[in-house]
Amino acid sequence: MISGVFHPNVPGRSEKPRPPVSSAVPSEPVARSNGEPTRASESEYSLDLRKATTSTGLTKADLAWHASRTYGWDCDEVIEKGAMTKAEYFIITCSGGTKLRVYPRNGRHPKITNMKGDYD
Image 1 (cartoon, rainbow, N blue to C red):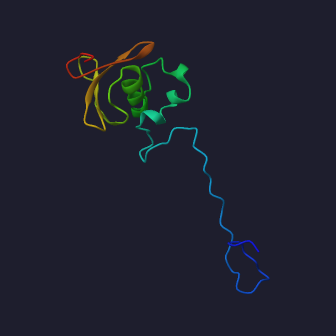
Image 2 (tube, rainbow, N blue to C red):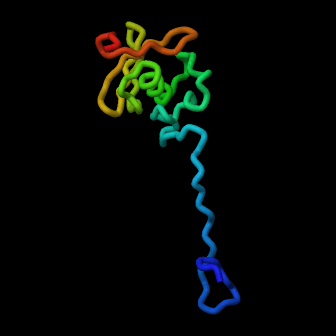
Image 3 (cartoon, rainbow, N blue to C red):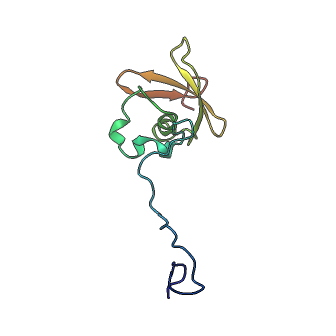
């Protein structure tokens, strides 16, 4: 007899079968409760690098991806995205507390700098 399987005709064996457990890794980004992914690893750019050439429609995950992988900032997750300023940039806050300026650019990935506008 196989343990853990329902045997209707065997006295004392009343365990019902359990659904199989999947160990598959999801291939799509994982959305947060508000619907937007926040981690660089959840960006669709991790699946298709060719999409990483725009500044429009960026999720927090896309911004984290560019901050960490394009520019090398310590920013694996963006927890806050501010409003566009008059100077045409917005501020993102990374999970570690780092704040960065994001300058969207037409037809290109965004420019991301520290709060001084530098890359150091």
